[in-house]
Amino acid sequence: MSAVIDVPQRFDDWSFEQFAAAFAKADGAAKVIVDAHACEWISPLGLVGLLAAGQALHERTGARPLLTVPADREVAHFFARTGFFREAQELFEIHGTVPRVKAGASKVLLEVTPVRGAEDVHAVVHHIQERSAEILTNQLGLDPKATMGFGMALSEACQNIVEHAGTGGWVSVQAYTWRRLGKRVVVIAVADAGVGFRHTLEPTQAGRFGERWGDGAALEAALLQSVSRFRDPGRGQGLAGIRRYLGRWQGKLSIRSGTARIAIVPPWDQDVPLAEGLAPFPGAQVQLVIPAEAQEAR
Amino acid sequence: MITEIDVSGVLSRTLCEFHNDLVTRPTGRAVRTSIEAELSGVRGVNVVVLDFSSVRLIDCSCADEIVAKLVAGSLEPGSPAGETFFLIRGLAEHHVEQIDEVLQRQQLALVAVLDGALRLLGRVTDGARAAFERLVLLGSAAAEELAAELAWSADETRAVLDELAGRRLVVREAGRYLPPTSAA
Image (cartoon, rainbow over all chains, first blue to last red; front, top):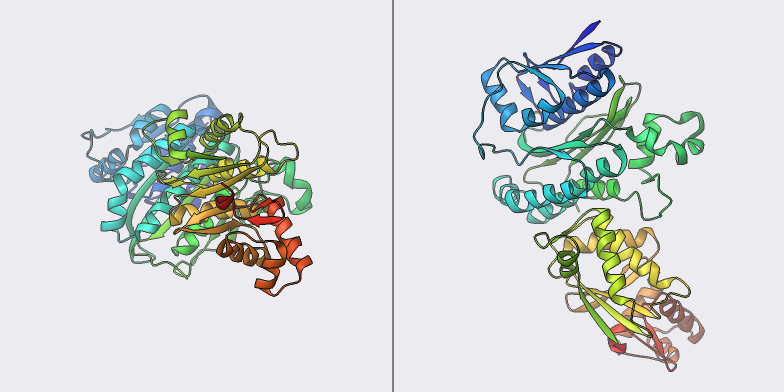
């Protein structure tokens, strides 16, 4: 049996649920086609989410799923410029013409980058601080103080994969106009197809939550109570650090894992703080959104 | 005795000479282990100055692995390093927040040089902070002298100073109390 997972026409955090539902429906299929031919726009979360799906399908079926390249030439070029196909070719059997892009043609803040160990996190943070600090400050009007915190938040988001996923993942950083806000934003998206928050925290937290235990409770414990699977009292501070940073710059944080999604929602957005009972999707997907020209909240 | 440690230098020697960002737990562990090795031969009262001047970024994980664990280790009974007082300097504004938070989380504190003045970072009571700040102004004081300055009772003041001394935030020497810089 084969199944088709349609990539939404506009693939961002809102349409991610549509993609996750199609992914869940494909469970059990021996052959899976991830169809991106109609895709017209994709966010960093969409890019890294696609890769996480590819990894999970590859592991589940033992075969590389098919991926169709977007039909629109400009969209396909954009996928290529983000570095997506470089990573995707390991996970998918790609159908369609993959555009060639010149080295250095990418203008994204950080191309889709694999994160497998601490050295990858160092490289990612170094890249942002060396090459993108000027863009963040001068072109996006981000306060220089916010740029330093940006590196910290990026580091902690990536470390979440290294420390907890049990597998590798990807990070992507881009700046673009956020339609719901009507202004430019900087977006960090991190995704993996690992074990997820519930599995990670279950040995130490499930008993405390009793019948309430599940993906939503695990996300609450990690994000709101800063708990960790380690006994070390210094653990569990990474997400708290990201929360503090985003709170100061009116940013948004959302984490999806398993069948739940939790968000710290700023006044400019209308997302729900916690959504449960979603279609199951492997690993964890984290998105940080920082509005351009953000003024420090006092 | 005073020992000065350039934290960025330790990072360069330990991991990579091209990076000056203190990020990730493994990096923090490696830097801390290197600092502990450097301090292993030191005995008696020792003021250790951790200099962050050349550090660009520090994240919560690395701050916890380096600063919080060094401070916590120095407070363990029977610590082989003797009486170690950690002092931190060269902090940028964005460093202060990370370090303060990781100390707060574990009810730890240490002395920092911020804008040329000695300040306490981490978790301390308002009374202990007030006593420390007045002691810094005086340079050194017996409990009775500080009590008069603060209009507190001598017993209350001595209790606060002893608590600060127990947490290695002030030095107790011949019946007087002084900030670690004065002791060095």
